[in-house]
Structures are given as C-alpha cells and as structure tokens.
Image (tube, rainbow, N blue to C red; front, side, top):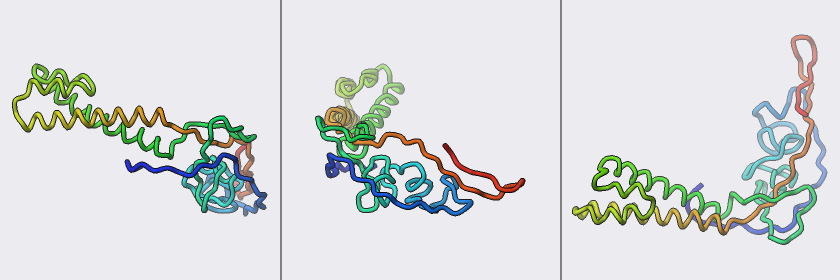
Length: 203
C-alpha cells in the first residue's frame, strides 16, 4: 500500500447476485492452487470461498465484499444509518483514504521513534529524552550543540508528530464497508486414488 491518499466510490446497497451455472471437471478442486472450473480467481469465487479485495471476479457473489467492479473485487462502502442488506455485516474499511492514512501514520511514527529510541540508548545522558514519543526530540534539542544534530532531531520530531496525526486522523475518519456473511459451502470433486475413486472437498 502506498502513502498517496485516495478514495473509492460509495455503494450503499449490495449488488444483485446473478445465478451462474457451475461446471467442474474431476480432479479440479478449490485447493489446488490453480484457477480452474467456475473459479473467478485462484481457488476463490464461483463454487469456492469468496475472493478478497482486488481479486478477479465475474459477479458480486465471487467477492467477500459483495461488490464486483470492472472484473475486480472492491470495497462496498457502508453509509451510516442505512439499512444493512440481508446476508451482510459492516466492518472498518481497509482500502480507502483513511486506511492509507493509518498505514502511513504507523509507518512514519514507527520508523522515526525507533531511530530516536536507538539514539537515546547510545547517549542516555544527553539524549535520554528521546525515550518520550513525539515530544522527546524537541526536548533533546536543548542538549545538542551541533547544527547537524539539531536538524536530525527536529526532523525526527516532525516525522513522529506527522505519524501520530495521520494515525489518529485515519482512525477518526475511518469508514465502514459492507462484507458478506460467511456462507457454508460444499466443494466436492471425484479424483482417482490408490483404492479407486475418492471424493475431495470441504464442508
């Protein structure tokens, strides 16, 4: 996931699920790491478990989200207060601008705080304040005389602060997506075995 913010279109209602005939040859299963039979992507869609986001799809029921857009499974944004379609529930969206902000915030804060913490361990008498998140680099500025060191501390403090802002903002502005409820499915295939034919599948 990159750190460029983006937004997806909203879809308040679940898409209809057309009926699609299922044809699967003997030996083809939902667990063979191949895209075969009625699967829309490798071992998912069709008569297998629904596919995750970004996987290939043909109809809405191929996707965990219940949304197939231009041949790819996408999030189906839930509008607060709207009725939840039967067979769906809502979860926090993980593929929108707020999710990107959370990811980038955690990345910026984690890397910059790790660098500050390491510096604090190396010079605890002068840089012990770096153990304190966000404010630590600014406090430590008073104990450093070198201009280069001050620039590094200020940069680290700015990155930690930006990370916290992005992380909190991504949590506050998080949207909800509609996700299909798990379905009990049966995928069976007949394949040759050492003692004749055997049935392969899951319930």
